[in-house]
Every structure is written in C-alpha cells, then in structure tokens.
Figure 1: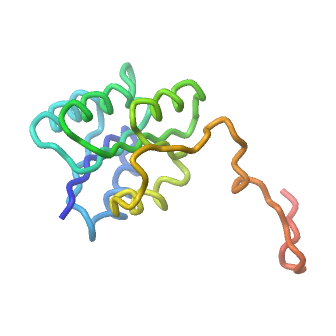
Figure 2: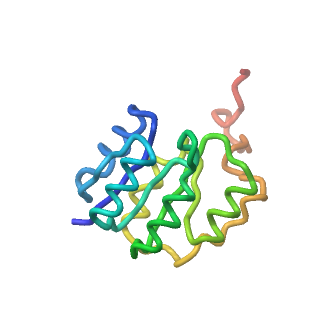
Length: 144
C-alpha cells in the first residue's frame, strides 16, 4: 500500500481525506507543521497532501523538505488561493487543488498516472465553477 501524509489544521477535513483514501493507502494525519516535519523526517511518504496555510508556516516549506527527502509527489491545497503562492508551488514541483475539489482529486494523485509536473495555468479562469446551462429545461439555473 502507498503511504500518504496529510497535513491539515482542520480536523474534520483531515478525517474526510483519510476516510476517502483508507482503502487504497495507509494515511497519517498531522495537524501542524512541526508534527508533519518530524513525521516526514521519520518516514518518507509516497504522497504529501498539505494545506497551503499552516499558521506561521506554509505548506511550501513541507514540499521543499519532502522533495529533499525523496518524496516524488506533493499536493498543495487552499480555499483562499494566492496566485503567487500557487505558481511558487508549481515551480517547486507540487500540484495544486482548491480545497473544495480536494476530496474528489486526492484519489487520482495516489494512482501516480499524472504528469511529472502540474502544467495547468493557475491564472486562467476555471470554467467548472460557472454554470453554463444546456438545452434541457432541467439545465436552467436556479435563482440564488
């Protein structure tokens, strides 16, 4: 089984990620940077999943440490994306996902069938977030 290290200050989201991956990976949850750092140095995971914002640190510190320890895949997520930090994460070899898509995407990262680098342009508008409608009556947008 693959080993997954999840670094998430939000306990509920961390547990949901663990539950999502429990059938295909052995997962460890850390709530802060310091415990994640010691866990990362103690055993090298196959995939690091970290929140971009970790109190006084950020997830990029862990991605750099992980790459020096031989971790080939890292996934950074946040609910408040900063374009500069997203580009920085991609530049150091991490993949980026928005937090609302994390539960759906994390299993795909464990398959290791993705390219070596995240080639997506974080500055482009994501069409999946806008309602585009269709020709059927059921495709009409509901009022907010």
